[in-house]
Length: 187
Image 1 (cartoon, rainbow, N blue to C red):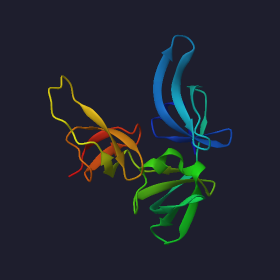
Image 2 (cartoon, one colour):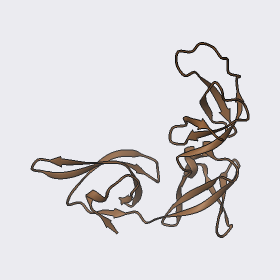
Image 3 (cartoon, rainbow, N blue to C red):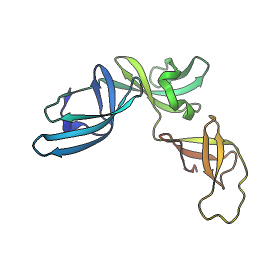
Image 4 (spheres, one colour):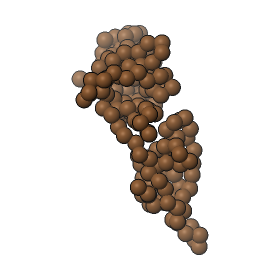
């Protein structure tokens, strides 16, 4: 399938030089006599590189033939992270390069989506937020604070997150996987 430049919206997967890329941002720019262009920010899904690229109205862009497989996280060891296909119950090991920073948010039995390009796993989608349990934090000290006071906390995966003073050890919190920020206490 081929895309025109106006089809390049956030989340669309395209193929450039044989590699899959994900559109992170796009904006339509009308140029005087030169015609309109679509300015995009792209992420190479193989090596993780992020770059800007403009497409003219005459450009035809090939879509990336990607598949998404629902899987469940099982465990990790020194060699890989292991997942189970939700339909076939087949277990697959992905090396640390494929999983990348998502490993900081993986907890037992988490539901994830493994991205495949040409039948090869190239990445993992864990969603925009996850629920993690606090394993270590200092007790909050109430006092007169002019702004929202935060303290460091460590989650069950080893991720360090700045949390409000009322969060204690054993509390479950929601964390944004895009930037590692605390979102809210999980009910």
